[in-house]
Length: 415
Image (cartoon, rainbow, N blue to C red):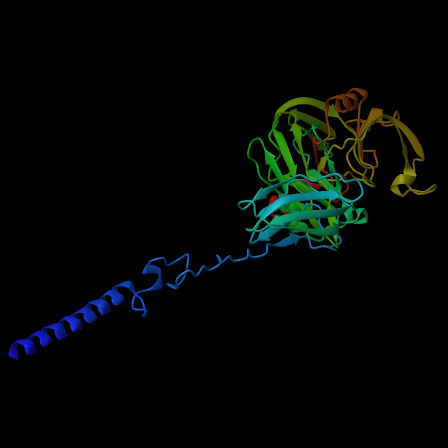
């Protein structure tokens, strides 16, 4: 009986061992519990669970819709034609971009930047023109959306320009200031000055002086060096002059500087000396302004007004019949203008010829002989300098011709 009891005990132990082995096997396969992560279990990933025969649908994340931000926004009016037109796509790229004139369909060139997410215009627009910007964006899922911006540029009524003196490629004397005359009043003077770059071939610097809201000049501290060159770059396109007036173009040009020619006119001794490149070239007897009408003192610059034959009328300088000094009307030759108010270098009248070098008889002009006035007419050019001494009169007003050299350079710059 003892043997039988031991046998039963052995079989009972075997059953317990088998149960334990089954439990261990279940634990290793994960069946019936979640001890191991699902992705490490056999068949995980495509089925998602260990359930026999179960199949889950693949999951997809929808693409984030692309959005487009355009400059200018649709409905914008008076858009500055110099301002860049742009479109920026978020959550996508630019698939197509077209900027065109509404009326004609003429396209404006542009380019893609920022890895294809931004489009920018590469050409200036026109004044007073309607435009349409069309941008097609594409998101990560391939979905495309087209957006539009309709806008108009600054009207032609707010378009400004300027004329300049001296003209492009002209040759002038060493004393010629550069002059810019604007079609509209300039409020933003500093912005205009920054947009105009004047470069001398000798590296000489200068300064601007505003004589009015529409006229500014530029000169250097000393005369331009003889036979040098000035390069003028007017990068003004799109500049707001003020009051909504927008400049309409960029312009670059050159001005040539000729020989240094200076006339020293001595009213006391009644003669003129003319120096070419600092060497005395000519001396002529002269008759200058009388005691009643003395010549202006200081510096004047020859203008572009030359008249082989001219008629002077006393009424143009405010004289009336019966006034002392009224000379009515006289004809002269070789007249070269120095001031807007009527100061010329010219051949003296027949009455004054005998008094050249002896008496001052004119109404402020510099009267010379036929030879002297002819030499000036043929050989001196706009921008050459006349310096008058020995006269009690004041200098000319700065804008009565070019009286800019009567300012010390330290006092010249002004707005």
